[in-house]
Image 1 (tube, rainbow over the protein chains, first blue to last red):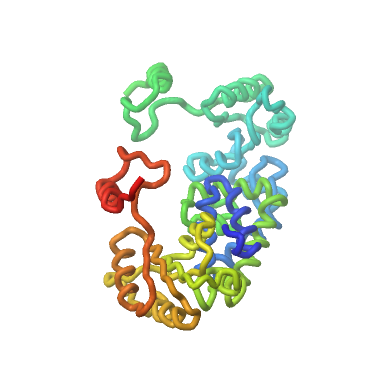
Image 2 (cartoon, rainbow over the protein chains, first blue to last red; image 1 turned 120 degrees about the vertical axis):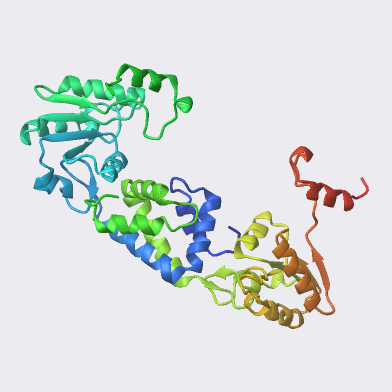
Length: 198
Length: 198
């Protein structure tokens, strides 16, 4: 922005530029686009942001984000299947829900264990997970953590903490539509080791 | 988003996904980021959007975007240098101002002439430009239009409409820091034709 453009627009661009995926240049472009369509998009967007900033909260049980103290998934009796899917982040929970493959409940850790970043079990809602297993009569814990070093370390730690309950993790292998030529060696090896009868 | 996530958050993601540079996936990521920092970023962003959506308007003289009927540049007596720089879009005006290379006033066309899109001279504030030249005692019109076919067609049309006034256009050549190997043939030819004594 320029010395001549008004403070409000400059301030808006600065705030937009802080969003992940937008830099100063694309924030300017987005703000110009919004100003050109201010009746159609900008006012509703301001209103929607205001509403969500007032109402959004973390579910006290699972850590999902919604507008109630306990989220829709935790309150729905249909989702009480005795299964809990443990994910790192709310984004992962949403990704699982988009797939519509899982009918049980979730537990959002909010990160992974990390000695470097001083993230211990208490920061990750792991005690809450342990208590939920008794409270909700859970029979299976599905670890859907990212296939990274930190994710797998966390998975092993959680498996150690859980007592008399089945602990499973997502299968590793060739993605649907994947071409062998483009896969890394680790994935091919994992897929070969976990081969199944055809 | 999922069937279970709340309407408000879903609605906000839909609106964010309409911004240029953000798709559904990055809009989700941005909204999650905002919700996690809702006190620090989200409420101020909602407020800034609301303010700008209420106050932003086009300058009736030059087409720049500001918060007054006539923008800062058009009201500043310092900018009355007798020069007008004609640009396609407000983004171009802002880019010129960031460079701090031009001390005069601007005229924003709001696009280029286009037979295909039925954009004629009246849609582009060209009559207003002609009247400004007399009203403001303009001595030089600098055409800073994009170096595209449409931009150059529009530049030629404008030059024809203007009477007894110097019309110039931006120089074409090698950009600062540019490497010849990466330049297209047209640019190299233009730079060669416009060569100057060293």
